Length: 508
Image 1: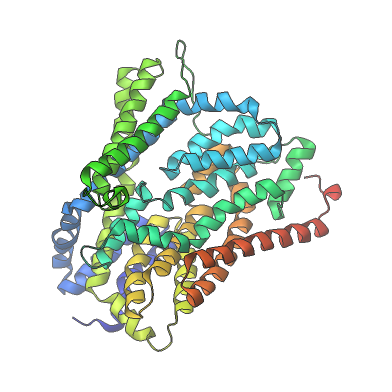
Image 2: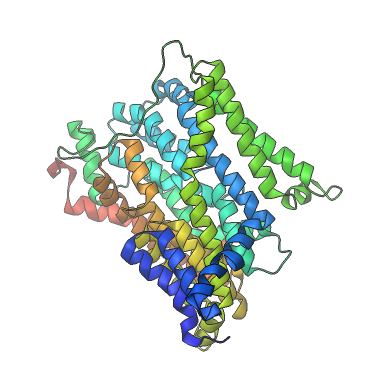
């Protein structure tokens, strides 16, 4: 059936409802229902088809079932790290070895890179670990929250061996020809994920140079000159911190060993499940990635719980509860994941991508395509606070659009992912932004207010990169342009802010 302009109704409805309700899951469900009803011609049949034609077949797909299993065990691993004491012990071991403000910020950045497997774990682990360090060095809580938030979602989105990577591959699998190497597509799109890489490197540049600007610069001056880590009127909701039990003796090995097990079992299983005889890399890239990730996260969570029990940090019952709570923590994420697959199928069946291709064929250039995808995804993710929902909406459109216009799919994927991350990174209703405020014990609105100018600056630098991508189709050149623009913009903003607000006149 040819629905014409109505074919864009399901994805458009998902975007509009997400803006209005701020609830991505309900918006996706409503959009799937409308699309299924359009195809069936009857709302009752359409309702039944949601389950029969979309939900159950998508869940039954071996790759998708693997994503769900892996996501559950990611939750277990995250809860284990929060409660097992290893991360707490690691923080205690390093806090007195960091003596300058620059070292403190760089250490927090490195910590954010190390906790690469989950955005939810990153902030609630890195924040409490380094809070004692940054408080002692008079680094504002706003700066700590910024460091946590800028690595929490960004790092997992660059690695195919994380839950985020698996989610992305699961979504765009539906838009690619059967048999496509999904890991290879993911890796080749990483250099075009310009905002994600730029925002990570910006933290390091700011830490090394001290080029703060805007509200963040005022917060840093307040902390350094007055010793006030937060503003006088700050509203702070503290995150749960690790409580050391009597008789417990956690060590840093409770963090280090599970990470070693995670990486070791991942590559061991990938090698076991991959084809042999054509080199190690060929074996790894063609292995059963989902099975390997599931085995790795379960093994690491189990080993972490056993170490915590041995160190008397957790009882047997509490160790068991880690897995139950880990599963519960990921239920909403899995539901979003399932309906992300469904909206992808519905969008394809009503011909939304085909209509957009035909409607834009006369003027759609690569530059317009990449920048439009990036900016629209930025706006959508900021309004909804969800990158996962934005992935589900934009990837099924971006890939067919690129293929139909004979353009490389990698920058189209990169633009969709980068724009979708923007909102997750800085929207006041994003769970990652909220967790960063909690982990750093920072006023939430103060965190949003101080971080947003940095996010917008990185987005502007990324637009320059996507213009370059349209000309060169080279991810590394485009990334270099984005990074250079980011550094230049930072320097200019710092100089302008110093001129408008000299430090000698800034006391709060």
